[in-house]
Every structure is written in C-alpha cells, then in structure tokens.
Image 1 (spheres, rainbow, N blue to C red):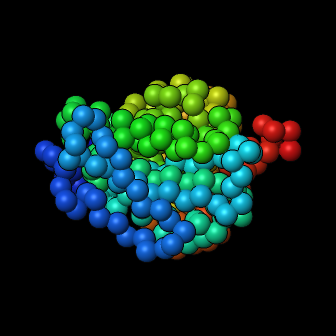
Image 2 (image 1 turned 90 degrees about the vertical axis):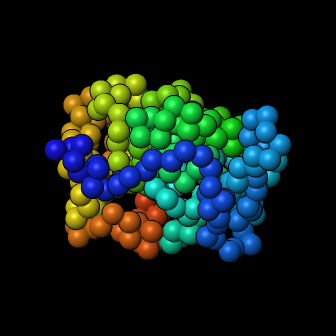
Amino acid sequence: MLAAILCLVIGDTSLAERDPTDDERSIDDPRVQHRSYKFGQSDDEEIPYALFVPSTYDKDQSAPILVSLHGLGRTYDWLMGYEGMLEFAERDGFIVVAPLGYVRRGWYGSYRARVGEEIAERSEADVMNVLGLVREEYNIDPARIYLWGHSMGGAGTYHLGTKHPNLWAGLCVVAPAPLQEIAALEKIKHLPMLVLQGDQDRLVTPTRQWVARMKELGMEHIYIEVPGGDHSLFISKDREMMAKVFDFFKIIGNRGRGG
C-alpha cells in the first residue's frame, strides 16, 4: 500500500543524465545569490546552488546554517521563494543554502532503484559539496547545522540525516516521501525532529507511520498535521508554517548555547 501511494505521488523519475533545465532558477530576488561550482573533474560540469546570507552576518561570529532540499522537479532555489523564508532567515541570522542535488529529480541519494547508482551518488555528493563550500567561505557554527526538505527533499533529509547523523543539529521534513526503511530512524533517534504534514496529502499515511515510530523510539519530535492541508501550499504560501520551521531550529540552537 505504501509503495502504491509513493508511486502515485512521485510518478516516473527515471533519468539518464543532466539536462539544461536542471540549471534553471525561479527566484528573482537580490537577496538570493545564484552561484555554481565545478563538480568533479569535468570542466564543463558546473552545478548551480542558491545562497542567502543575512545582512547581520559577522565573520567574527559563527552563524547557523539551514540546508534546504527542494521537491521533485523543482528548481534548486525553489524553497527560497516560500512565504517568509528569507524574512525569517534574516530575522534569526541564518545562512540558507539550497543545492540542486545534481539534477532536479536526483532524490539526494535516497532512491537508487529509480535513478541509478551514478545519479544517486552525484545527487548526494552535490549536497555535501555545497555545504562544504559554504563552510569554507563563512564562519558556520558546527553545532548549528540544520537540514530540512519538502517532499523529495523530505526523503533526502531522512537519507542524509541517517547517512551523517553526527553532522546535523536538527532535522525538519515537510510532506516527506520516505523511500528508506522506517528502521533507519534508529540512527537519528538522538536528533530533534520537526514534521509538518497536510492531512489531505496522500503522503499523510506514511508520515503518520514514521511519526508513530519516532514516538516508540522516544525521539524528541514535534508533529504538526494541518487540517485541510495539501502537499505543497500549506507551507509554501503560509508564513506561519514557515515561521514554525525557523522557531524550531532557533529553539534548538539557543538551548545548545545555553540561551
């Protein structure tokens, strides 16, 4: 049943190589930097990413960073356009980085059976490469590195969360499409987790199952199920929901710093 639900939601994601549309962007906002870097050894393979740096950034003070993973087929900067995203990042002093994941439908390494090993590895590597680049350039607090994603990005958050459980200080998944075994939660049971889900989304059933397992494991988690909420608009067009994401990470960060 779960496999059928996921198939209906994600559709056909098969791909063979990068396409020019993978590099397209959606956000025309001077606060968002659109960058690229050389991926691997190929001179002609420049992979884009988006970056937001708050005006209050001070190189002499470490800053929190939020890695943002887009949904299936979306542009790499898509989450930067969510209502309130940049305003709350500015308010709370967050650097926000949005990697592509090598291709729009790469699943960040979480869906090898569909995209193939090569694309899966590159999609995962792109996220980690971009995070590494930003950490080299900016003074990032290693105790305040956060990861969140929507839909496919939620699957990527689960995958990269369990792959690098000691890197992240907290995770947030929004209407996630998890493709790994629920047992993977064992690896991140020490991490605070925020889960946002619309009750009219077909993914509500697997989300409830994962949240139930979080409870069984004694994980520190917050689950918000939005009545009437769909798969996307309940967060992308709702400033209050976006505020919950930043409030969650801010509370975690303040707690770790004794605030």
